[in-house]
Amino acid sequence: MGLSIPFYRIKDRNGIEHDVSAPRSGGEKNYLEYVFKKPGFLATCIYGIMFIILGNISGNAIAFGSYTAVAAGKDPTKGLVVGLAILTLCVSSGIHVFTRRGGILLNNFLAIAKILILLTMSILGFVHAGGKYLQATGSFTNMQATGNVMNVTATEINNAAVSNFDVHTSFQTSIHDVASYVDSFLFALFSCTGFEQPFYALSEFSRPRKVLPTYTLSAVGCLMIVYTLVNVSYFCVIPKEAYTENTLVASTFFHYLLDSSGDSQKAYRVMAGLVAFSCFGNVIIITFTAARVKQEIAKQGVLPYSLFFASGHTTPWAWLKSRIVPIPRSTSIAGVEGISLEDYKEKTPMAAFGLHWFSSVFLILVTVGLKSQAQYNFLSAIYSYVLVNILGSLVSGSLLYLKLDSYFRGENGNNWTAKAGATGFIPRISPIHAIVYFVANTFMIFASFVKPSKDSAYTSSKQGYPWYVLPTVGLSCLLLGVAWWTGLKGVEWHRRRTLVVSRTPYIERVSEGEYVQKAELVEHEWIPDTIGDSDSERANVS
Image 1 (tube, rainbow, N blue to C red):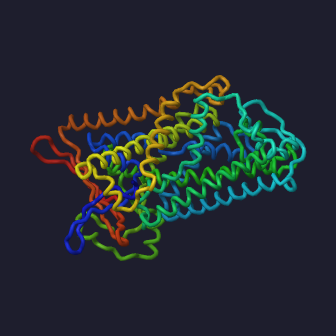
Image 2 (spheres, rainbow, N blue to C red):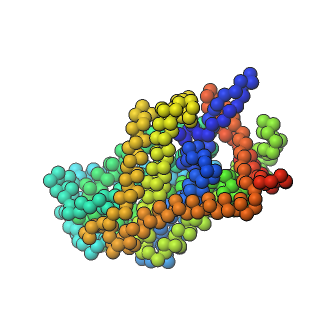
Image 3 (cartoon, rainbow, N blue to C red):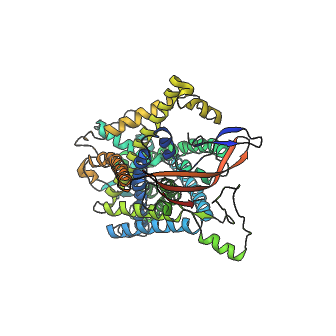
């Protein structure tokens, strides 16, 4: 769907009209607006308010602060962790504001480094399991445990691969309640999110239709393998009892492997630094993509001063380069009045980055009353619940609707099958994937209201917040979006004018059957309900 929406009707050189699709940034927003066209702006408000508030990973910023403190040998106090979390949000937003290209290169470097770290961890675990090298000696303290501090002997560590993979005991547990499984799956989902990020910034790709299908599937497949290997590697080193009670699993993994005894903390702190490095990479990439989505939300005119947040501006780095090496200016784009690429210096949505930074810091501050671990747990789980479960249910349900509408109504309806088929992106298992995704996400939305058992790891006393807060806050975001839409309609009624948004894209053909959007002119016009002058604003938001 991301490579198919939106559709445009253009004329070729012979004057013949064709329906073409040019991918646009925005991710799920484009899907929902395509399906739920009426009432106007309702889908935009519901999605927009949810994403503006929760479309960030402040939890990773908190994790960065905690792991950085551990790596530095400091006590991860609340003030230190929150200060470091806000600092990394400032740095990540500042980098992307200063240079778009530099931010992308940094993203790529961090991604490669993180993959190399994971591969190294996988190898070390299997080497230890061989029983000859990297064997533990002495006794170790299971630090940062969620329960009581426990001692782990070298024998237990060296025999972990045998005991953990014993089919008779590996999955033995007294906890079998639905809530524990659902909550555990929320955290697992958070670890696996990221596949949707390229679709949040499709306008940034030079050839998205050629690049995304192959490389997205390849990346997801490779990460599935690497993540599985890392988890198997963990179980080759960390005894089950220590694994389930630990909150800093990666650091404990290195501690058991490379520190000669529990008194040495060098490897533990080094790994904490590497995990902090990984968390910083997550913040960097999400900052880049989420700001693009918030820019797209602002283009729809549903925010105060929408065009301010929707506009792109020349980066300071591009401005400095233009002073050193002047580039001749061009006057217009394809004769479209009002759109000028100027010299098309590198642009970035600075105001949208500011909005993203504000919402990220806001989430950290409103949860500052929780302990650092509880704060991380809540921010990570609420991200999964809203951005994965709720939006996943809405999007997969919308896709099912389009397929059923196309099947029963054909050309008289949305005719989705024909439109999507023309782009060449129809999965062979369609619509089984949409059904499974819809059922799974919808189940988790409501199953999260089930109270966990007394011995569950997700009780209020262990989590640090009541179990019902998470789904209540998550679903309340839907109602907040409806309330925002009601307020927008109230503004239209009070002004006796209707908001009309027009978006004029500059579309360029890059290859046979592939078109990309290079720039866009957005106009917001308030049309009076009675005859009279209208108020309008426009902005080139390329």
